[in-house]
Image (cartoon, rainbow, N blue to C red):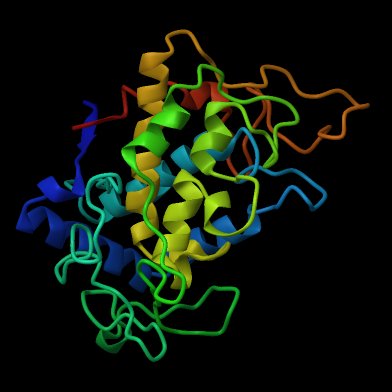
Length: 289
């Protein structure tokens, strides 16, 4: 099979938008979508907790979400084989009315009273997008674009470049405290208080707000557009730093506080039987336009 293409959300045709939305609504109707929410919640282990951290605050942040995106894309393509996940470049499309916040795609901001999204295909009133899995009991999709009470900005090209120019994938102790390495500079766990401590990936989640805060962030379908853009950055980083690999290459030993808590290059990424090594080159599966 030939590699398929993931496009910038601004380049989607009206038909491509409709087919992408319809495929999402169909896997939601079948109950498959909520499985993705549950999977993300189950594997969101913070580094203050014990146990393996496959999805966040660890080197496997990028390969875990790459596999997660591929699984979603497979589900969508079983519904409609023309569909691929588009990406949202938040360094360019930075306002509450720019792509992807249109009525024919993700819908817009939440209303002031309760942050409920009332526009677009995922609005609660339309009946096709009721939240069933989450940390709170709310049934409707919520957003607070730009954070109305304490406004913040989306990350800039310079902030993204700060991550991309780091030639090392990740460094010990392989968690949210590292100040070097591409992975955490992109994932965005910073030091300090308030909005300055949220970089790149994390800042985007904060800027969107509502359902995008916390482990059940998959409830907002814009999650996938955001993570497709992050996945593209991993590909760009690899192109720029030829020969740079996923780290750590081998797991920390029994005396290390990260022993059994992170995934090394040739170890399996739960809940799948794939390794970070096997996900470093996906050019045979898809590419970015």
